[in-house]
Length: 505
Image: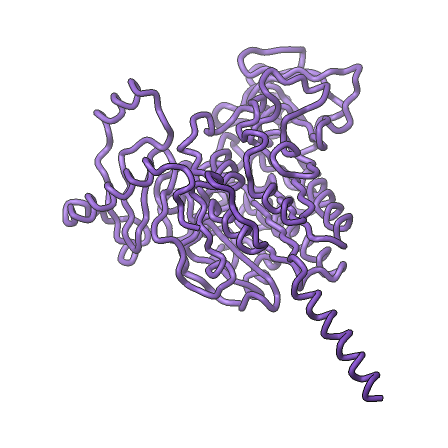
């Protein structure tokens, strides 16, 4: 019996050791335009988010986590490359027919995980360009996600309010009839499809500004499209479609380490929730799509539970930038806000250089590895490249992820120490260090030399805020602290001039 007992103990020990050494699955859910105050665990009013609230109680709720930019494309670029988007021209908000802006072959967050043995999947919104320019949507669509580190993808090319309004699986448009080829144009009308400008009577929701080109599914979009009728998405089923694909990826890869990058369309415009969510919240259609987003998260969590993957899955939920209420459609969102404050106690939102532009919800759960609670560590999504590399014991190649910092202890809740400083990106650059924040007059993108010289001459005065006293950035104290203004201006200049690969690992 003693020998049998010893054998059983050895088997159990080997099993435990194998479980401990197995790479954790990583699920990253990236919401779109969700503000710091938009969900219950961050103070939402009139909007129910039970699944996200449960995620917060089971894991870490970060109170000073940031997207790399106050808009979508640059945030996604910085997340996947570990490089501030303002360093690279052409990384602003892209049209739907833009070429891929991440160079194939450069080290990326998914490619580093792939090298460590992960199967990598991309589901949802892409908005980083596809192809090399003048893309033929009826043939092979590449380069794209599969050329920058993902093994598979099921995506929308850009945003819900931009053509082409089709899904792309790996290298092909889904459901395309070759007898009805797709054409896309962002400069002039094409085809016979009606536009919102000429036929407003056909619209389910009218634009408040822009968004008056080709009508797809009763909604006028940005840009012109003809053909591809059998492949066009239905907005009201988009959330369920993406969730189904996310769950299929998890199920197909449950027996090996996987990384799922799931970028939801919700809560971006146009806001057309599924029938069961329409009118569900107390805050109009914008509240409805937040509750639909919460359901999406709960559905993925349920899949992990059903497959018994929860305990070995690092689960992260966050947003690509701060909130916007009217972003081009007169959908009643402004009128329905009531007491709800999308940015919570923060100033600004999407497109803004103030905290509401980039400070976003950030929830992290890993049962048994991360102790539930709150963290005030300053971190940014740009740091996930170096942080995930450290988690899976991969070296970051020289020159890769030049602005990404290894914040693994902070991510796991082992330390409240995050970044020493952070550059926030909007129409101008801001810099955070400690409780101080400087909103500079430096443009938020690289400009041609002649334009930059003119912009510098007309630069707005810098603003300085002490966030420990005025989190809402209501009091500019630049005049009282010229020394702090100078120190932060010098630090921002140093970061802007830093050579690739010099960020702390």
